[in-house]
Length: 93
Image (spheres, rainbow, N blue to C red):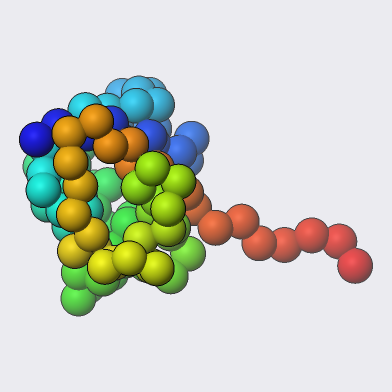
């Protein structure tokens, strides 16, 4: 089933500058695998060598953090919106 995936600005160079993509999958893990098939290189930016989500990447399904659901195995359904949000750190003293 297709869902809308919102792509953050730093990753848009891998998606032909698209800010939203329709992608297939029944779980977040499947969606990320399909993104890698269609947009090579995006997977290594989102997951580590063991296939787990990098700690500085947050993913939300309908504004709910997947870390408080089933992580990468969070189920998705038609019409869901998946947002990929890179963590931002830094600031002034």
